[in-house]
Amino acid sequence: MKIGIYSRQFNDTVLPYVQQVFNVLVQHEVEIYVFQDLDQFLSGKINISGAYKTFNKQQPLNGVIDVLLTLGGDGTLLDTVSFIRDSGIPVIGINFGRLGFLASINKDDITAAIHAVVNNEFTLDSRVLLTIESENQVFDGDNFALNDITFHKRDDSAMITIHAYLDGELLNSYWADGIIISTPTGSTAYALSCGGPIVLPQSGNIVITPVAPHNLNVRPIVLGDDSVLTFEVECRSANYLVSCDSRTVVIDNSIKFSIRKAAFQLNLVRLNNETYLTTLRNKLLWGIDARNY
Image (cartoon, rainbow, N blue to C red; front, side, top):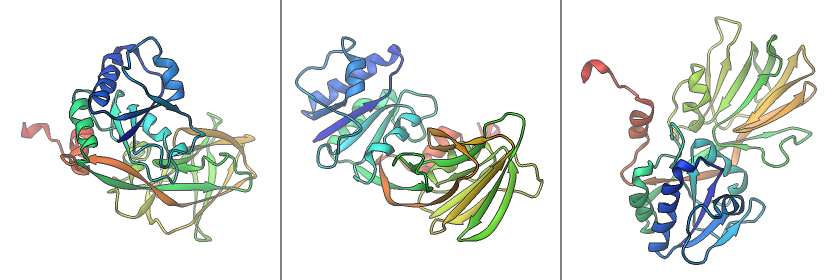
């Protein structure tokens, strides 16, 4: 099996766990591919026995690696969307961050998780992505989001007005700090913090959640993922922010955007002892009532 390893820079306190990852992969005689920036960061910090290869974000990975392993938090795993794209390569995350909802493997379970992956003891959990398009192509081709796409004010003192259209028909004009357009995967991220509903991954929905709306009658709305959404933004300042997962750009208010379901999905590795509901309970304490314990 060929396994790629991707990560951002991280605190040296997790280096023993990184060393463990490489040791276990070597024990299983896995062909290792290390992200170039990570290889440079780890130089002299850990010992990787045996030969390995490197890769970069511009390199096509389809047919090169079988699985991509991320070391970090959910943000690190989200980074992979921009270069995994439509390759179908499964992604699994070992959590070195805080919550670890997507990167769900705990540091203490590294050995067991890698053993399961190498022995094909897992299933693939396909997740819908969103794509955002405009005349200017402001994201330079990296216009896909696994969690959410957001429109947000840049000026701290004034709201923005976001005109939203559903399949060409006016849906609403939001007076707010911003809005979040999320996938079911993203329903447990930023949208959850703004009062949005939890939506199961395979439900086939897109959720629009306003951020601090100046209207008591505006609430999150759940739409079918076959919808095409169009947005126009008005603001007092010259520009506002648009984010595609963790990638943010500054936009002037003359640009119109359309958002729809992407033509491909991302395959997350789910170990056979994991379910979405157990992750909800363990990570978000879903349904936990202290009176019962």
